[in-house]
Amino acid sequence: MHDVTHETRFALTDVLSMARQAAAIGLAGFIGSGVAVIHGVLIQRLMITPYAIALVLISFGVSA
Image (cartoon, rainbow, N blue to C red):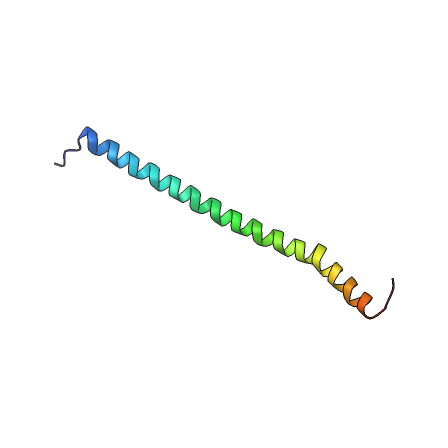
């Protein structure tokens, strides 16, 4: 029969606790990356593209 000592139980819970923390940090990174990509797409579509179109029209001498 395998005898689990008090120190072994604490070491096992420490490892499991660190595994949960690592998983939480990984999940936070994954969520943060998704938010950053969505933010970049929205900024590109809603802010950058209209200004770029306006600059092209101005360079051709077209006024609104």
